Image 1 (cartoon, rainbow, N blue to C red):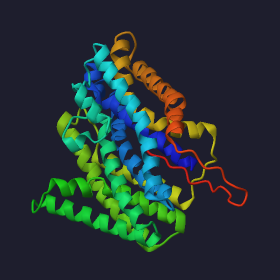
Image 2: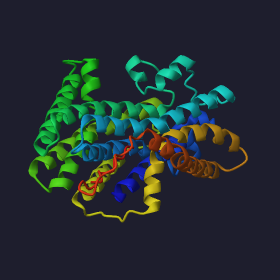
Image 3: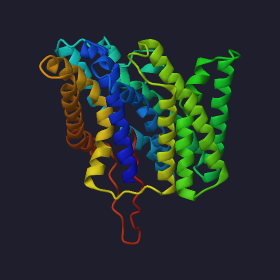
Length: 365
């Protein structure tokens, strides 16, 4: 689905814009919102690019597990997630270990870098080597929940039951915590009340895409929208409290509009109202997305301090963004894909009486 490749790339660019033009004060040595006053209110909404990633993930992961066993699902996720992740982790360790870079330095020991290599560092209460790794922990927990569904067997009815139970649990946990009735860290980690709405919305929209309409999937989308809106506003408010509105000039209305547009765009994709022909460009953009998300902070720390002072801020941001995209494409083409080919199990030779059935392509933000 080429339209999803484009949406994923736009989501990654949104995150890059948020970090480069609003968030990375230590990298610039100044508040980016003051350097880009006209762009900051729009770039600040790039924080919601991760939310779009989560919805796409719900859609695509359900698509990829349909008709597959647990082993195939686990292999596909390992091969898809870890090669680029390990490369980015090595780049981060080299950046701070071999240069004098200080901005965004996680200050990790060699042992902590090794734990980060598992991608389960948050389980052990350790610092992420990169600030963008937080979303991967949410993705991993989603995959573990999906593994339960795969073990049970993926059918439309079971997916609907799964989504309904997860939504009810997320709403219940959120309400209980809101009124300070009950709070349990383990339950919160499993249920993910802050992100469940995005994943469930994506799954429900895939059911619409695969099986057509039906009131229950659309009800899940509507409830997920309300839950997601509450979470998105809370995340933006937390950022504003941390940095101040002047340095994070994003209004509630702009968040509501942006999240609504995200849901509308995904609904149009699910309904087939937006269709794009697969092309090498769109495939490359989709493949570049994950490395861009992982590597853009490394590129920023390496280039922005070097270029600042010699060029205007907008030129620095533009050059750095283009460099991040180029590096990410090179990582995708010459490192990630070859490693994935090595790690993927070889297909058995099929006899003429047993035709090969091509599986659906999985894609992860």
